[in-house]
Amino acid sequence: MKQQAEAGDIVLLSQDESEALTHPYLAHAWAKRGADLRVPAPGQARKLALIGALDHATGRLIVHRSPTKRSADFIGLLERLDPLYGPRPGHAAKPVVLVLDNGPIHTSKLSRAALDNRPWLTIEWLPKYAPELNDIERSWRDLKRHFLAHQTFRSIEQLDLAVADAVERLNHERTRHLCHNQQIAA
Image 1 (cartoon, rainbow, N blue to C red):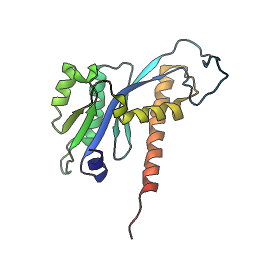
Image 2: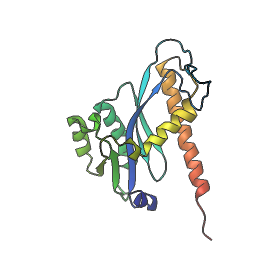
Image 3: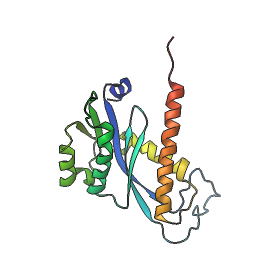
Image 4: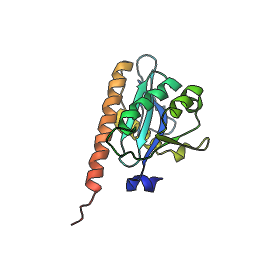
């Protein structure tokens, strides 16, 4: 399927969830053996759920941010995908394949109904307990390691804005790298 996506025959989307924290992530940090690698941060850490899809061919990360990771939040992501990849009058439609794990938010009755209401979407299920097969995992790592690391956010709203900016910057970098890697045939 990756070869088909790279050839432009299909759209391949890898979907998964993650979370961002108001307290700092430590990336590429070192300390003496036995030292505590915690950074003091005020208050209790709060979470922001990230429900995302990665377009394999373009490297674009589409993220729905939410306070929770529930079926309704997964459907929120599907609603973001509708105008981007769903059928549109006057446009040739490519087959769209969505790769999902067997998480409860994907297999609930509500989610199954939402997926069934999108006949343009073909679902490929990953085996259970195999996150290494999901390409979006590297995007979550890059987002946290390179854009959210070593920062403390005072509120969930500040974190939400930082995540939105980080996703935009990550997508911009990937677009720039794709443009530089393309060769023009003479």
